[in-house]
Length: 174
Image 1 (cartoon, rainbow, N blue to C red):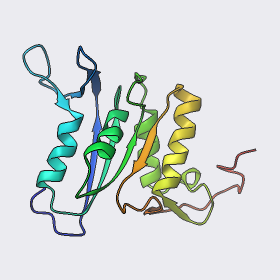
Image 2 (image 1 turned 180 degrees about the vertical axis):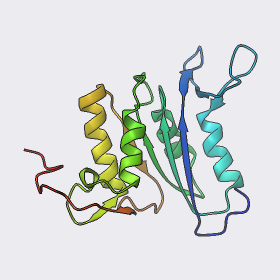
Image 3 (image 1 turned 90 degrees about the vertical axis):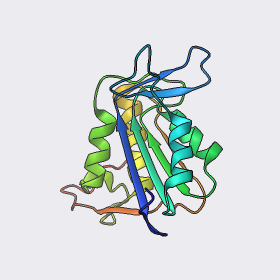
Image 4 (image 1 turned 180 degrees about the horizontal axis):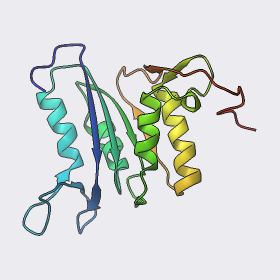
């Protein structure tokens, strides 16, 4: 992170397990070595490390775990120097399914799949991807995904050119 230049974007993606401390004050991502003797990766430490070591100006943090919405809460609470966007599979207080719906939708949006281009303008923006994920997670998994931006992170940031829709009704609500 220290090699980044001003204006650089950090993209962070984590998938796996998430858990809360016994007092429920801290949320952890369970890294491969997490267990009784080693705590997981505290979500507040992720944001603190980005603030301390990342020399760029924007960070997009994504996570697909139980309680992943804690990452969004921490960006709002601790993010000062860096502008953040955080997109997660659940709220800070919600368990996640074992399905890969969030990750699949994130990848499809980054690939520019036509259904992620909600307004049909030929571009997939971050806010469109977040809306698509929100709808899919609510419908398919009964989960509440989170999306927040801080500082001057543009919610309408272009992620990918959108593929042409075979039917103009794709991604349209009734």
